[in-house]
Figure 1 (tube, rainbow, N blue to C red):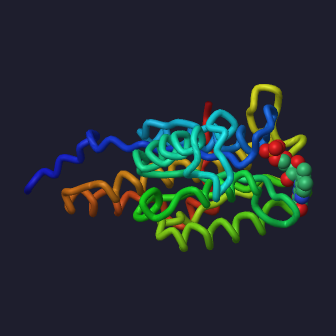
Figure 2 (figure 1 turned 90 degrees about the horizontal axis):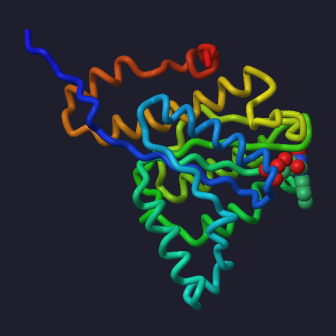
Length: 217
Ligand SMILES: Cc1cc2nc3c(=O)[nH]c(=O)nc-3n(C[C@H](O)[C@H](O)[C@H](O)COP(=O)(O)O)c2cc1C
């Protein structure tokens, strides 16, 4: 029997964008948590903090000093295999902060990449509009938007002082999105199709995504 070596040397990089500039942003905490899930799956992870980039608005992206910032932002995204997009729900939509950041990018940054979605809302209804609209944007950018997504409601009480989710099911779901993005990003990069098939067979089933296994920390 031929032994298939499933190598661990397919290095993947997963980055997160959080569409809020607030220092105490619940969205940033949620994206960080999802990135920890990607890290558990073997990816190198980085939160690309939009507050630190200080991007110009679309239409001013060719004027200095913003032009250099936009080029660095786009290059950092291009170097990623997977991207977690997180946004607060603002007036029934995703935030202008994230919209502008996405407007400054295109298929060079997103095409063929795995994308995971995280929505955060002040209300109990959660961020369903944000998630649905971001899924449309992902499709438009020709990204692969993974099926698992997270809506975090009641954002003011959703995370504790250390940025940990208060409700375990929220934590499990955030981890699950990060893991799924990292896992499929890795599969997507595998050149050896036998390795692909072997990993595909061990990939999470829909039932795992709906009822993620509890994470022990
Ligand atoms: C201008 C504005 C509009 C908002 N609109 C909604 C909304 O439509 N639905 C909702 O559930 N929460 C809404 N919120 C609450 C935010 O989603 C919530 O405060 C969220 O935690 C903000 O994200 P952040 O903590 O990452 O900064 C709104 C907040 C602001 C400031």
